[in-house]
Image 1 (cartoon, rainbow, N blue to C red):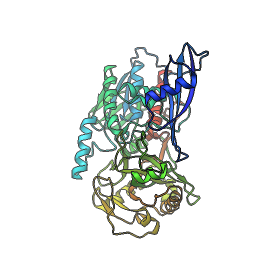
Image 2 (tube, rainbow, N blue to C red):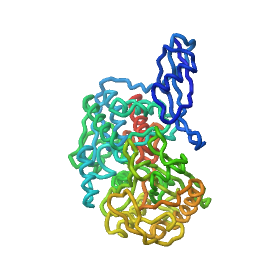
Image 3 (spheres, one colour):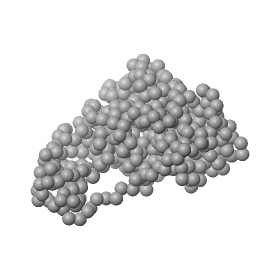
Image 4 (cartoon, one colour):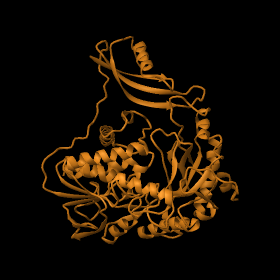
Length: 510
């Protein structure tokens, strides 16, 4: 029995039978098995768009073996009488706890919000009533911010192949579509993610892990650089090691860590607004036609040097998705994007943000706490303008011309829009860069000017970063780790989960 890898160009609406026929014809064999290694859409020529599919074929008629070597994550199990506390159930916190429990530690995972079912009900109520829930929202609750997103599984992080394979295979085991193992741009959709995080939690608990919902980290008891207890709203927890995965929104957790001597520094991040277009507009721009059989919805990823000082780029593009009210705290107003697995909504949305440093925003050198404070003030500014969680918004053309139009704006945003001069609400250097970047995007994509800008997008990454040792420990501490997006070293589901896994393995292999 031999194996051979082949690449095939297939129509966008190809069937399994057509794929088998192409394999048989190319290799001139009839008796074989195969699996898909990769699948990507090639839309460079709008007159000839196709799937490029790489398959590994096995047959007694094939000589040689072209099977790729899969470097699997090895988690050695042994009973370890050490208590681990993990804070935050987003991708970083969950996969960190999952690996440590598999390795034989006694793991308690705490989450300030509720389980995903209760969280979903709270979010639905918020979107119907406009009454904000401080415990369960788009930032806090089981699965973290990623649970209510598009569920993208792409990552630019290098050297995480073992971790990525473990993450994706765990998702598939928990109910994710098998295609995430081979799609170039895999995604889960929020509908799948809500089921997956629940199934993974059940597996964690079956392994002996303990999950405490509605339990918020308040403080750490530290003696000579070593955490002895984790102080929570549900009581104190003894710990031999503590892993904190705060996500990008837990400002009070950041500030508590800084008060306790955990070293942070400021870093570049990005802010802006969310762009929204009719999905058909994006389809025509990318494909030259409103519908492409066999493909859900067109995507885009745009970058621009803009004014030459601040790069402008699209972020977290949600085809067929919804713009959502993503505030983590009462009386702040920010937006984000979400979509379902089918990506069949009327609208497409993505962040349009400019990279900037907190020092430039403030016009002076700022501390990490000051960087967080100025970001929160911007989030409060948008709330104060709206007087609610409605999204301040304007058309792209109005933003470029700095002139508000009276025509109503169509949107997927559930809490309504308020016409606003976003160029007056956003920081001046961000506005200047976004205007240059948007003009560039319009030149690159036909019809891009027929879109709107919504609200304040402030969660592309954290403006601060913890200072860590090579093994992931916080500098100056024996048993404290800050991981995931909130550490400033990761962003998105896969890279955050991988960061959590690596920190876990550093303890496993210690």
